[in-house]
Image (cartoon, rainbow, N blue to C red):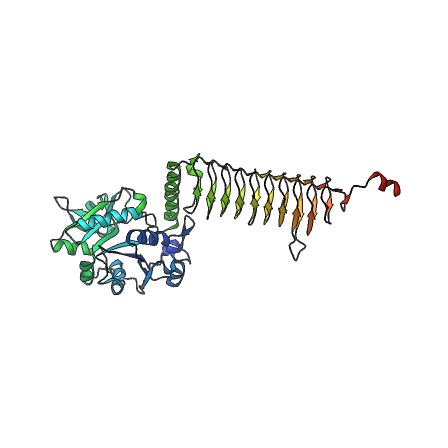
Length: 452
């Protein structure tokens, strides 16, 4: 049996009070519409049909080839929206699932369960419901004496008795495709001048057909986003979901409530995440590392057994057993090889610190290549920018850079070289040579001093 998915995404979302289309507001670091698209593809293995209206060009650009598109120029209700997909889907699949782009926490597993329920249903509709004491505008499920679904009543039309009903309609359906396309035109126009998909339930019941209701296990899945308050609630729910999954897979999160991990992040087992840590973008962390507290990491690759304490890392790489912080900053292009130790208040940008480098506190390395086993003293600065161009500093193996050294690029220091504290190095330094002073010069031998 084949399945198609229709995603409703045409609404303007005026309650968001934003120039950005509602379905493009980010959740967990990516536009919320992409969650629905990904769930749809997972359950049907086909590109869903996305019904677009307000901001359609922006939505199309974000979603790209992941979906097929149908426009709804006039927003005349959910029934009218689904009708826009008819020309694309009629005669195609045997079943159609209808979901919403502003309900991004819905899992593909739940859609699969709904699909399986409808395949076993003798009637044309299976719908997803949940029970709540805070219905937030959802329609109520009316059942008969034998518990069978009789109708869905929108909240605005409910009697006081019906408002007490705790079972509500999520608006998520799985239809027999042939029945759906044959009956869409039978939906009556309501008092608001719209066509509601919920009226198909009454039409099916009037025909004597069975309407199946499946209860959602997790109310967070059907959290609809209409305001920025709802968006924050969805962020909290997504954070709980992600953090729980990582903890069940061997990651220790000391305080999940203060830990933010985007879905794109990967973490190895036995890593410990301390409070107030933010992990975003395409970040990968190995096994047995210690991250945080108070760390922000974006788009980084971090190896195993690393320690990152109260630091900011952006698009950087740490190999195994590297350490940074507290209060360190790795900017784009920073690469710390195995065993590198970087002290507090240090900063590295577009530079490679090779194996075993030790970088003291209050230092800045920009556009540099630092050789294996080199020691960078506290307060060292690479002067890599002259106001127009940036230049490179190259330091060999086993070099000792004294505290408060200024390395004026472009400059190269050979293997085994060293600088005295407070030196300003403006010229290349040969291997195994000590330089000091302003500007830095090699130490003179006793013979050279006598000749002076």
